[in-house]
Image (tube, rainbow, N blue to C red; front, side, top):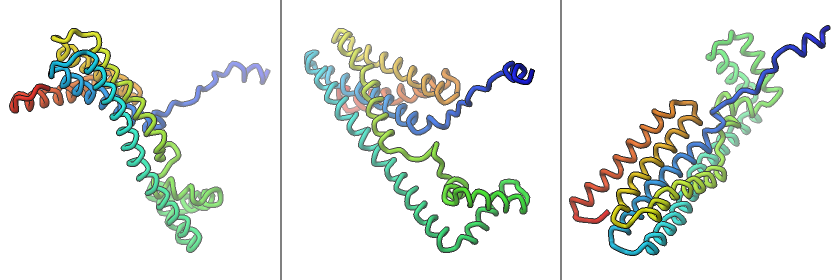
Length: 239
């Protein structure tokens, strides 16, 4: 009877925590949007000079490769700086735990009191967590370093580079398929569509409204292209 009752209980599905996506999602959105906008600018600028389709394609491919490498390098260096800072803080915390464990225990107790626990319970929690993993407890509750949000330089670099290449395909395909006289308009429209898709996708992955995400990214993309157009008109530069 007991086993039958247990079998009728609904099984609980694992919870989905979107914060786990924060590291690679930020790099992916940045890379894709930069790939769309920057390569579109190169394609339209080269096309405006009157060269043939092969030259436009070559320029777009060169911009894609250079941009992807630049994004990967930039992401790796910046996120590695964060990782270095986290490591340095953990080294300091490890030394303090070795030199004055009682003071560190008091510090952890005060943190839990500030979060709402009464003094005696806060002390017991601090003692238990210290026995289990003292450095892990201080890293999480004092320094704010968690496994979910910890810096991952290689992941950020690879994600950003791949996303840049995917985003660059939007203006590249438009440039290949569109007739030369309409290339600038076609590429601009494709860029806005691509930005709206990446914005909606990023918002959905983050648990927000896809319409709001699409509007936000498209607005800033259109503003960037408008600014470029105005500068080109003022200085009589074909862009």
